[in-house]
Image 1 (cartoon, rainbow, N blue to C red):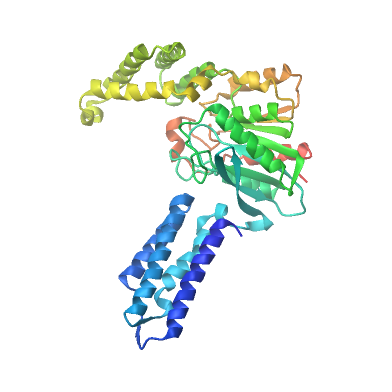
Image 2 (cartoon, helix red, strand yellow):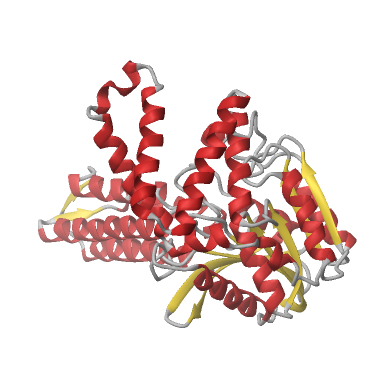
Length: 452
């Protein structure tokens, strides 16, 4: 039984016990209506379940609901109104139903005998929280730990920019049903993990990942010689670093991972995004040149000039829009300057500085274990044609030819089935993987004799 189930079970037990105690102590006058306080408790419990994906908010709301329900019971007992169990039935029923509504991350057992366990491990002062998904069948199991891409993400790979998309939860369940255990965890400063995301550097995230690998390999249910790493986007940088520096990593699965330097990758990203948005060739070339100038100034740390260039670029784009779309902005010069200052602040962050300068191919050169690299055909953020060649070349420099590259048809950077691949359509697409992704992963693991 995991913590969510224990939480809900204890809540039900407390409510039922108190209500039964008051009922047995006996009051002459009985009241069967749902009081306003009980109704409020019902509302908080319902809200707690609806916000169950955020465990901190969900459990806090549930807790308030339970406290209000207890207060309501005692108020009835002191006002000579006996409590009938059915007056609290809506709250109790919601709590009982709360666990399945919470979803896979709060369920002790999924279909097919797959079991989940909420776990924690520590990296120095940072406490990282996650979910371990275990397959049915006899242990020990092969296993993989998942590393998320850029931006704060919880253990399911969920972000605010793509509501409802939980890629790591889908991968974990698929692999567990195919015999591979999966560890996924909240980024530091996200969900139930401690720390501050915005203050963390790339070495911090790599250190967290190495700690996760050691934790997973040390579990008694896990075959320590068959533990691999899987990263998505920037998480592939983390996966390659971990694999290169830790002999416990038996394989690498890369989802949309770069193999060129950040500067080159981001310039191609600007080009592909413009093409996906339907820009003319001339406009695409102009956009790439704008980005090149911006990146050069970032590398040179010419912040004042950079602010002027970014502000002018934003203003130019605003002036190209119909007036009805910019009417609410007011002073466009002031608006552009404020936006530029925010952009420059982001460029100054050590993590962005690191990624822009970093050569991802150098990391792949140090990987000597088997590699499965998957790219989306319509990915504009990590262009398949650019990076698949560079990846093979980097591995070859380490005499590692144990690599399989798969291009997933019609998939974007998030491996959702896309129309154009543009970043602007991410939130509008079905929140499932494009056909072929999961099958490619499990079939490769079978080829490598990792699946039982």
